[in-house]
Amino acid sequence: MNYDLIVVGGGILGTFHAYWALEQGKKVLLTERDERPSMATIRNFGQVIPSGMSRGIWHEFGRKTLQTYKEIQAQTNIGIRQNGATYFASCPEDFQVLCETHEYYQSIDYPCQLLTPELAKLRFPHLKDGYNFGALHFPEEVTAEPRTMIYRIIEFMQQKYEHFHYRPNTPIIELETIGDRCQATDSWGNTFSADFAIVCSGADFRTLYPKVYAESDLMVCKLHMMSTYPQQKTVLHGSILTGHSIRRYGVFKDSPSFKDLPPIQDELSNKFEYNILFKQAIDGSVILGDSHEYVPAHQAERLSIDSDETIIQGMVDECKKVMDLDDWRIQYRWNGYYAESASKSIFIEDIDERIQVVNGIGGKGMTTACGFAHHNIEKRWKNLPEETDSICN
Image (cartoon, rainbow, N blue to C red; front, side):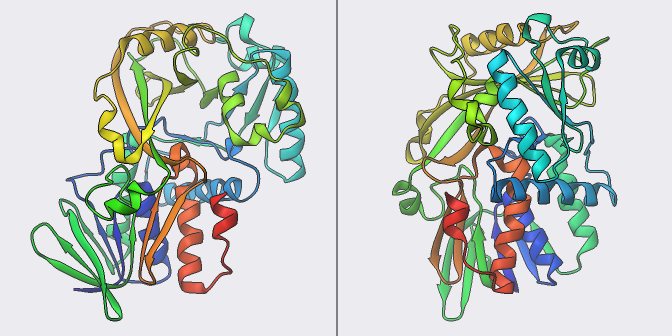
């Protein structure tokens, strides 16, 4: 069967490449090697936070993603909740960076509100007094339920677009350009033809173009995340981010006072990279995390499939320094894995004029993949100026 576009990989990055091509009236095949997408797209916090993205084009991608999620949510329930995101200062220096970030976002008309310690405590009564040096709140941002959202989006696309074909359980084992078309072959021997193909295969570096991945600077990041039992009394509004996030996220690094931030010193940070985040799920449980462990993509098997109890307990102990929950018992724990370029914001490799690999969007996929995919598809079919260098850097 012939298509305008074949997308390999049914995660958030692949799905939205398919979505935007469909919006342009293209005939699209989206393939997924498993019965359902099951990797980074569903193993994340579900925080959609353009506020944390680097200034410039990646923030804009985040805003496009936020707008699109809300537009789809207005048509069908994909589990999006507009409950905001709040960054809490762990010290006076953190708050100074938040003040500078607030001024920046006011200058580009991105809604946010600076909270004094008193107002922060009033809105978030479970916040520990010793951690409360003020906060920066973004009311337009949303949370998602990642374990269900991508499935609902694909179902919505199947219902909306006549020229959309979705094939799960379809590992593409060969993809090549033959004449003026590219041809994909699945493990069953079926072939599919298209004008163009985009490979968004996530952490699968061996099936297609293993040499490309082996010669790249792509890393695989393993994360530890966990979820409490549903809280009986505690109610947390939106995404809650901390001083760890202020030191980690791109937007804050451009603040003049970022260089003055004191390092966070604790036993856990001496052993692992980690971030302290909170998000309450629809069932009342609170998702906590997360840690970061990196290896080169071609050595991904070095990452253990097991959860490390030392990391789990260490993060819980750090979370207890920020918030009071009425139930700290851990109901579930899981590992997430995502690819990230060591030197660029995203990894793009043109195999030839008809086949492109897009990978390594890192931990910002839930927030920016939709917006980036929109740009990439527009560039392909509307002949936008080439901006790959500015995007990748």
